Amino acid sequence: MTYESDALYRWQQAKANQGQPYQIYYLNPTIETTATAAIVRREVNDGKAQAARKFMDFLVQPAQQQVLVQYGFRPINTSIDLPTVPNSPWSQKIPGATVQPTGTILPPPERQVAREVIRQWERAN
Image 1 (tube, rainbow, N blue to C red):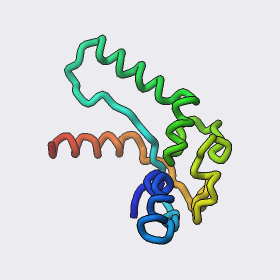
Image 2: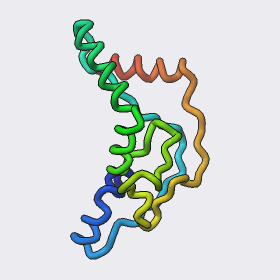
Image 3: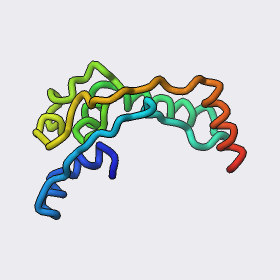
Image 4: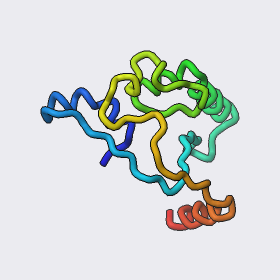
């Protein structure tokens, strides 16, 4: 098993190395996931924090999201049509690749539950 983006991006490579392409199977998800970005170090000055925010803002712009789509990542911007992005894996007829995977996506956990998970994780580290 691998991330969808890896399977899509390396599809031709797998075909060359293994004699057959990857076959993509979508699992039934149990929770919605969202791509995120974060500033890893807490003690940064305002200039570095603002630069990090500016970089994150840059990454979510349509042009940059389209570049990420070319590498098999799904965009944060839902107005981007995957098959129409130039060189999109979703326009290459990759076996099993689908724009709208089937399955039930449950809502994310309540914020209180997420806070508790974060608290436990921080305590363990």
